[in-house]
Length: 396
Image (cartoon, rainbow, N blue to C red; front, side, top):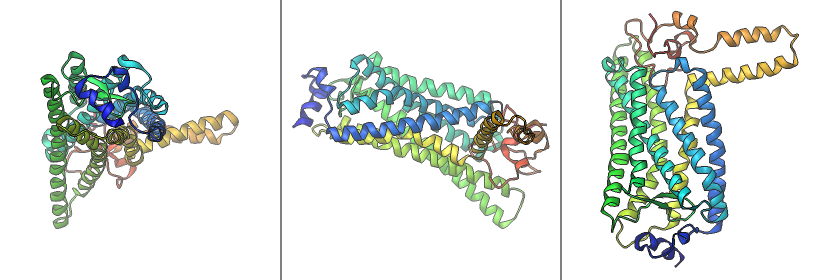
């Protein structure tokens, strides 16, 4: 009976807004949500902060496709800073604590950063497909193109985030009462809300998921064909094929993780929007929200743990910090100076390494290193990140 009392006002509008800011799930579940959100917040701040730090340290060496990795980390960090500080105390207090205006801002930030992440992954999958499947065009993709696409990603997400503030759709408390998002129950009596939710579902979920699936399908087909060609005739293209395989593994892992996190919320939201007489359990929305917010932790972990150039750069920066700490305690020792020289000489995008490095194949220009993953099997002086200049092109 408690569930009906709090969910019917979304449809009927006959109860004060204050009642909608009271939790409709048990206090134990709210404490569990608050605890999980606290863990997610810490892990996201550490993971995305480290990823942005590494990207800043190698900013002159960022390849065009890595712009999308940085943008994804920015959107995840934005979601962490704008949502968790409000969601955690509200969950622990068993009610929304911050009023209607903050609720609208919370909902807008959630939609903006969530859609930005999904649209960003869509753009990344398209760029990787272009580079792997159509290298003649992929070789022409530059940092300027990446910057334009990043701006387009934010503009695209902003349209749907600002729409409810202009009365195209509406924001309000979540059905479980301790957070805010889109009002999914306005469909039956508001044509504008209906058009907004239908547009949101088509252009911000179905279309991006279709593009992502098609892009990686084409990549898998291309990689499989390259492997068969290599088995029949061993050629210098073996290294290119290995790079393709690693590109697919990392990119698919990130996209599957993100879609797994957000798909339950999309399903529950559509269930609420299009079910005429059936009320969605608030606990279903709460569980879907937990999975959605977990995406802010998943993405940086994948890149920091499995992307060689980011991982190596972070390791080098950590060694440098440790070395400086040791230097402060042993200034007279000549050994740290030698180590410092070695660390400085091993920094990525070193001009000496770049000038001596070679592409994947001596007979074909390197055109795939700008995608998400690079080949672990290559020697240090042939690694893709050492073959690229600041603009993402191989030095002459």
